[in-house]
Image (cartoon, rainbow, N blue to C red; front, side):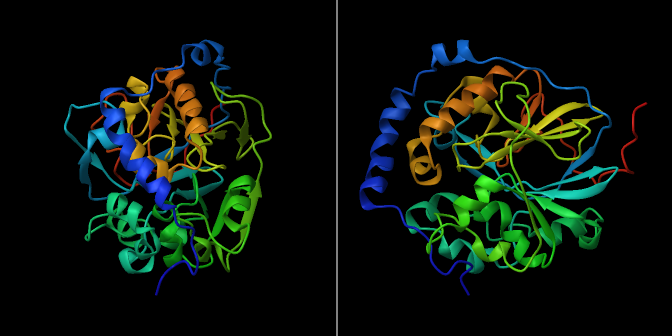
Length: 325
């Protein structure tokens, strides 16, 4: 049974523009905006009252052309791409970031993705569903207190279909975008949000690093949610204070760390079909680029440990993090 009853489809013109833009992006990638870079202020990171422990759940990678991830980047020719999910343990609760996919995701979710986009983003047939991933590292689903999505595309929240009743903390702007009107946005997952507690928040806090708005999830500065709009209107990044330093879970603001390092936007196909606003996504990429040496940036589809400077473990989280005096 499809996961979404009605979902928006890209127009034929948009599909043609996406494909037609590929050759231009290969030979003439979008140039960095030097004026924008110069205007971005790094506001720093507030000192945390505690630290958290984070673990990446196991997942199987597929390999995609690097040119699809980052315009004009030829080497390596192919790059690993996977659907990451993370478990974070805070002294006041354990939560799941982007719970990934459900059992039989191809039939329950991928089948609702527009065909023009589906051929580019569908996962492997043996993709690991969220319950299997949790079990593989010895974590019981009942030990998870809530879910914190970076955004609401199917490959980030379809796993909720197999976690009934689990509470979700959600950016109010993202919730409004997903639920407004009779038809879900492309890649939408409305059934994943039904019949469960929803806790909506706003990015009502001060600037953090290069990001203009934030929200302090626990009130102790250990988990700060920041504005990474563009891929979707309410996309967020999750800035975690860990023992090994600050780590930013960046969702789909970028598909690979290589974009941040080289300041290259996603290729027009499939990004014209996947990003809600390419220009806002481009600005967000500049903000990530500015702080790339200050924080470990982990895109949701990046292999992570294959990239330098990204500190992500693939083992179960340890005991609750200690509170600093």
